[in-house]
Length: 280
Image 1: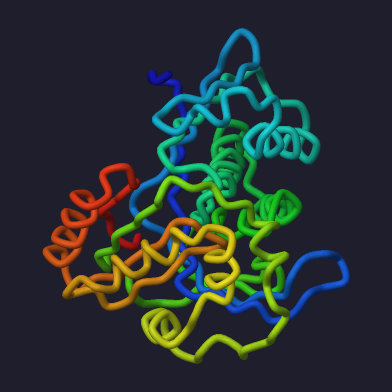
Image 2: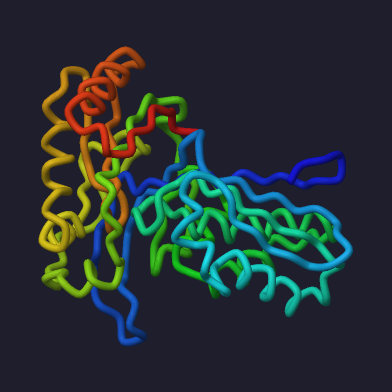
């Protein structure tokens, strides 16, 4: 679905370069400190005027979402209309290029892209209102709406932009296992292991950690295999899981190191999803 009247919004994959879980909250969420970053690849959200409203999912990872009558894209459109008034008839297409339930914010990025696209279509210029809608949709949606490297606190919605690591070569690997966020958080041991390090993005990433890695590996042991394979390659500076998994990433010294690591992993595990990209 493209054409001269189509609005196209990228929904870039999100990485948690570090993710510190500080406490369980009374509202059922967790108090977090995380370093969000985004890569130069992701889903795509397309909006065009139409005779009748419509929603479609296409792309290589559309399958799990096609049968859903309600997902974060449709919820974002409904929340936008509830805040700003009825929408004109538009057809929305989600081009799904990211694995589902994989710890890289695909659904959250899709929701954020929906809000941006509808704001462009309707002429809405209310960043604070959009941020409020985003926070109601999910913990990662505000960061995806911002779309730049930032420290996130609270549920992740209190954002502080931070510099560093733009353009860094990164390799993403997902073993084809969908991991439910709630299952991983349920296995977190409740120990507060301390705050994020102080510094720019490079320092926070290198000195930080992901407190959900151990519980995620208990849910899906193959995550450990992914991390081990990433860490063994020369030129990999940091190998870590993103979010609640199962996608893992490697920050690499240069593009050649990233390419060599990707080639080795594809040869050894051709069924794994493997993406060579950069931090945006």
